[in-house]
Length: 161
Length: 387
Image 1 (cartoon, each protein chain N blue to C red):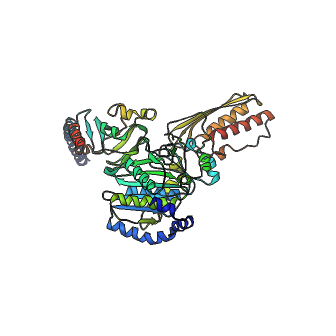
Image 2 (tube, rainbow over the protein chains, first blue to last red; image 1 turned 45 degrees about the vertical axis):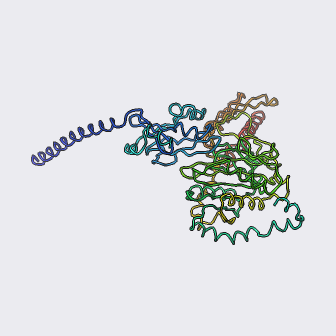
Image 3 (cartoon, chains in turn cyan, blue; image 1 turned 120 degrees about the vertical axis):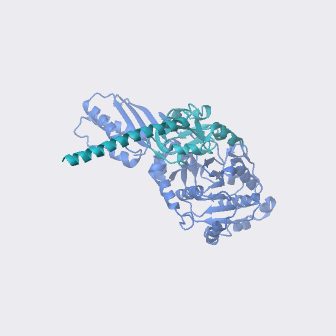
């Protein structure tokens, strides 16, 4: 019994040590990832969507260029809460007088919130596309997906071309 | 061309119009279409051999989702037997007479593009220009069609600021809508050449106009006129011919108008899945944006008033509040039960029939019987499904 006890105790000790190491490593990793993803920074796609990172939640909207191309938005169809979206998957539709345009998810994750203010005031997408006209919020399943998106300066260069 | 048409005697003109029947064209061209898909031509004109709205919309969606349009542009034309087509975010109960359509066997469909509600019958031509995103240009498509028609017939046709095709500066002969995706787009529109105006007006008259609050997109009504009223030789076959050839001409290519069967899975694999979805209740009615109805009914004869408030989500009753000022317990119990049973029911005859059926009221006093029957009738009227 003593032998078994000592063995188990030894294993538990090892486990304890491993846990501590893991904790330290984890913290270090998390620190690194926060410094790379500055809070409130917007990342843009070639399809003119943006995602703003705040902690573990991304807010999605469309750019000034996109809202101008669309014309006056008359209806916004948003994804439902808890919908799982893949990068590039159709997330919703913006209907303007000109057309029904699909909105594609810039990253993968799960929808946590939809901007219900757009039900009564779809024109917010035109008037305040970076603030009040946000479309939906989602979790960020793969932070590395943000690496493939453009920062604002690069996006502005992209649309000039 | 214009003068030649006028000089040819009427009888001969009628003969020329029917040189190739639909079936013959289809048999000739079906094989050519599947071959041409492999050789990847730059422009194609396809015409559907079916007049079923769900089948035609399914093929249009299939072409939009599946075709590689980077080096190809398609003009797809079709006609439908009587149908009503609503835009992606519209409310069918507010845009048309849903129970009447059902009783008359008129199909109801919801597009994937935006825009308003339209009535189709065999006197309407549908044109859909499918192009890659960089080539999307609605005005160009509409101008092409106006040029095609005005170069063959003496008709005063123009495109207005709303991008409608207008006849004689007054009458709308076309309604336009489009869909923009990642790489592909389509712009489609109707063209009225010989539509039954009486049926159109009946179909688009909604009985659910009072007391409704809705977030859905609304239609803009306009005065209409048929192109055939200007020249009776304007019909489906001649329009297809003229517009199709103009499409090739302006692209600077030679081409044939190809008749295709939109149900052919060997050419369009998976198209039947699109059709199944298009025909389903969930798509047609379940995609309706939230709306609510608030109605008050008064019966002087019975000395009662009824208030009915219903909230609808996804085509279902999300909340029902039925309040009658008749103070008897029986009536109160009846309205409470009705409220409970209506919750979650689809706004359709099958579901509501179960709830709003006439019960055996013989055990009640006469006044209560009449009040309950009246409450039932008011609900049927407010919900407008023709129960």
